[in-house]
Picture 1: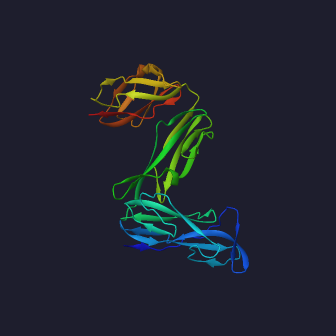
Picture 2: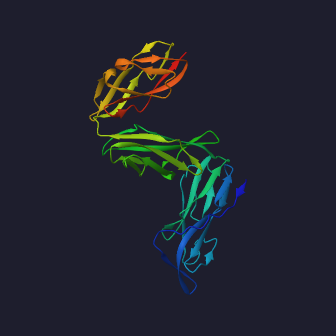
Picture 3: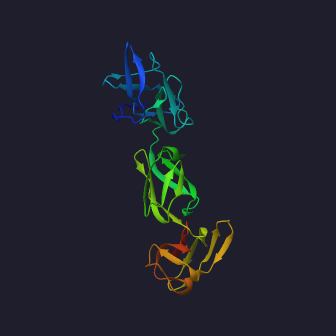
Length: 294
């Protein structure tokens, strides 16, 4: 079993201060910390975590475990990986990653400890939504999934830090949902531990279509051949509508592979692979048509 000990850097908590009696002198707690900050364990192992308190007078009290007037409660972000007992003992139940939080009289540590079982670390983070085309005023759940070094996947949506870049303040991410605020578009990036996702593009419009679907989703073409995809859309009542290809526009990842010509027809130009997104009534298809030219 390899243990890595590192105290989290001090950061002033923004929560309201509360009183704690230490001896005869009344002090206020300004921060709760958990140590060790990073822990790597083998499945089946156990160890006890420690809580630390910093007071308003600058004094520091370490290894607070239900000591005097201060009682510590513990929380694991993933009890399937690492449950924790009332005295701060963590158990390596299964492979994965979990975060451990300590609370003193309801004031929770702002930075948790990270526990990795069997050395599992985060290698990739992916974001997914049922559709990335939102109607004005609507909302859609977003999910973040971490790929661990042991090959397992773990949903970590509630532990991700979100960053959003939009035109016209188009949307925000709140409580695991993307909420459409104004017409426009933007990008969402999630960060879990030290791993950042690739940007996920989201479109907000007042159009009647919730999503646009291109069929087939993949096709192979010979150079100079022509292809017209079938395009359908779903309106706000989830009714399916067939769209005339002549009434759409295309966004193509590589125009040296395929180009649009008149009336929604696509022409193969040269060898390669291109992704083609379709826009109808200001709503872009959430998934592309992938064209291989060979």
